[in-house]
Length: 352
Ligand code: SF4
Ligand code: SF4
Ligand code: SF4
Image (cartoon, helix red, strand yellow):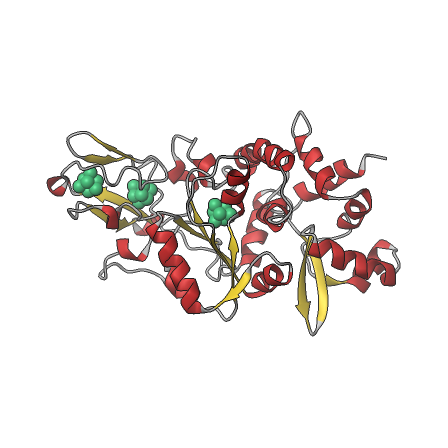
């Protein structure tokens, strides 16, 4: 029989976000570090459909009374996802990213960080950049968008936050793991926002704390002041908003290595320089997390690199930067909700 970790890796690769195999097996080493062999066997029984312990036990021929506490413990370790319906816990498979990795915020060590940093560039290259539907999208910061510009509510982080009834803020795992190996950037840590069911999971697992809408809007202001890119989940009703830096964020830092990050990001905006206003002060250059701006006599933006985050616009002292909405036929309309996002991803990968 194939090794349980190989079977688990294959199982995770059959989920929408995937978990591709490598030549040196680093992905197996990561699973061995996170799952016991028993936990790996149990994880193999779960799908992306939430189910109560009794259903999973029946399907997998296990004893429900034994399995229920095991599932609860695994969900608290961040190996699988747990939600509640009618007062009953439901369990489903967690993807590796966004999922198992992020749920290990409080269980990091140098060896795991090294292995994950070896593995994630491959996951990004093999799956994230190739997939048509991504797990995250980019929205512009509010200060960069003019009042006349037509924006959709799902493109405005403030609107997304105001529409939530449950919000949890967590430390950013990307900046935490970089900090732990001496590569921290010093940008704000506690700015990752989760909403709804995901927020309850984060709170119950000790990964974050519940905050009010006002506090969440404050977090947004802190993130903007620090020059973090706003990346909500890729749905009209996102379950999270990430605030990311180009140095630590596992998504942005891998996108940054591409010639045309703009081609593989869901964004409806781009920035442009008004050359007559530009005084070549270079204030915008460091602000851009995609290295899209160069300055000689005036600033120039490489459209292939601009992901429409808008961070450069409020930084300009001379109103020389403006945001534009892309043409109608280039507009990206996100899936209605996260379930639709994952269904789209699964179909694109031929899994459904
Ligand atoms: S994706 Fe962004 S906000 Fe989320 S953990 Fe990584 S850097 Fe932090
Ligand atoms: S130029 Fe850079 S900072 Fe400005 S919107 Fe584009 S990606 Fe963002
Ligand atoms: S911040 Fe404004 S004025 Fe300064 S270089 Fe950039 S575009 Fe030009």
